[in-house]
Image 1 (cartoon, rainbow, N blue to C red):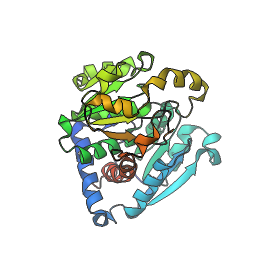
Image 2: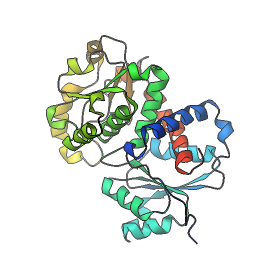
Image 3: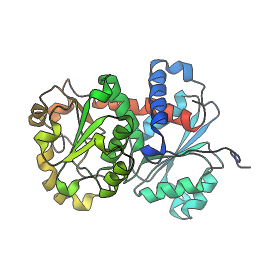
Image 4: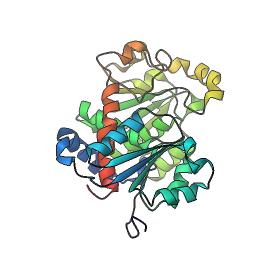
Length: 311
């Protein structure tokens, strides 16, 4: 028997799958859970999470698995290569998987795969990372920024590096929806996709986002400086070209000096030290990188409760 024959389900594949009001509620719940985790220790008792991985993972796997455990539920790790997802039709395998569990999280190469999974599944599907988006990271990022910059809507975030990056894409979405100013500082060839900017214009959210190749202008006044790897998994064939184009956009003390402030430093990890970010910034007193990493767990607890109707 289908575990959820009548339940209306919600997926979280990209940040705009939640409304501004819903994002605000999830972030506020994450803060409450972080403050008093034991109060939620049985919130998902009897619930099961399937975690399906095409890509390797540290933070995504551990944060979801521990989150589910601390909420009283169970998490099941599935390496794509050791399942029949490599043999059978994607939709058929997902329809079967959804009969056993209450929610599915998938970390995939192609965003189209997680979209197909959501269409086939009768239970919520969460995008744990795809080539187009990393919405769970964005939740943790905003949770961290709000902790460090209480007047968040008066703060400025500057993402320096690859504007086509999946992390950057989701960061743009969540900042725009929550009214946080974000500047994307990147070479013109690595600017956010035109479709992304057009969607923001259509939703009347583009006023929160600026894109520039001028590092000094882009980071001026920034309260938060953020970067990500210059070569993501699956882009290894473009490594030399990317590293050459993005080298001037390394996050370092010189860039910090251009802000005119003492900005917080963020990176979603894994970091390639002295490539996209200097080691001294990773280890500096202004680094909040490992707060970010921890907040993946708290934000995802709130997301799981929201999607499973337990919020």
